[in-house]
Length: 185
Image 1: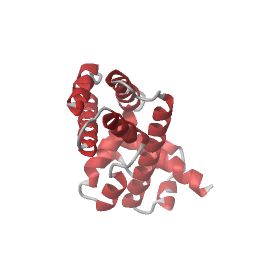
Image 2: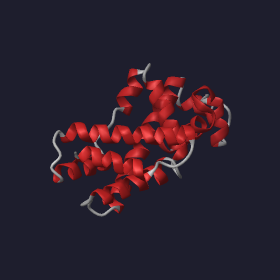
Image 3: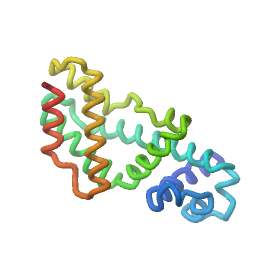
Image 4: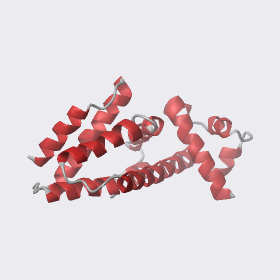
């Protein structure tokens, strides 16, 4: 029961952060979002730092789960067009579409992690199915310095997602095509 309640509170905290930003993330706001009595969140997470850590752990868990699901739904990536198709799906639907709110929370946590080494450690890019698919694709296509190119490509895509969230509009397929072409050069 306690772990279910912690998950419920972490999910509510993600929603509060997406809706109200870092300043709006309070124990009371999480209690309200979770429709629980006042004081419930602080009983499970005594400090704001503990609440934020739980939120970030939940965020990383959900992101990793989603990347596994997305990778499993895609065929093996043989062509640049197939890679761009996968990236388009991920950016337009998962990160800026239906997953927009979680992306907003992720960026808020990333900025906060600049001043919080514990959060930074949790948020450090992890090995995941998406990263591995890009790495395998670049290797299969004879790219040199695959680790660096993978990192650069994914960082650029992250920038496109951030721009889409801040300025509106979708991540343009042409931009993704250009990034993939550059990674293959």
